[in-house]
Image 1: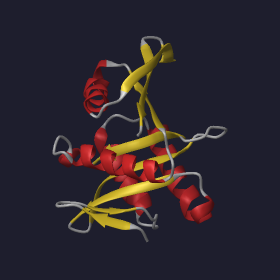
Image 2: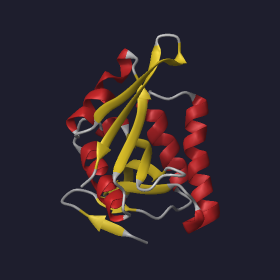
Image 3: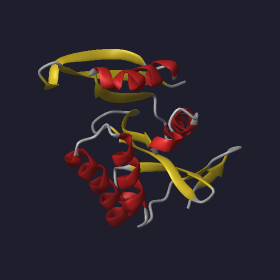
Image 4: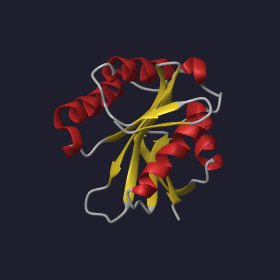
Length: 166
């Protein structure tokens, strides 16, 4: 089990069975995701539990006082050299705007860099509800690389961010 502790959080990279429930609670608490998206988050946990180190999905769990308060899921993009997708990053609603998301993102970036990552790609929605998400990535040094009009639905564009490492 790989773990690291900063001044307020412990980070864990191994996936354990209780993560299914914790991830469901975290993602549902955000209010940003549809039920089918929550199911996808759990499927990625299940993949990691079933395949172990053979899974293409990698995780970081942020814990405070033994409780998982946030997590990220990432992986190298197939057929690339050093490009990684950040599939998920979420923090329990009661801990949002506390700095946990930024610290979790920074730790995840460190893990990607340690794996030889050269760029991190993130996709999100352009809907007004996602303005805090767009600002979060911009503050963390991500730049908008593309906007795909009406991707998710009419009036709901896909915003693709990138951050180049090193």
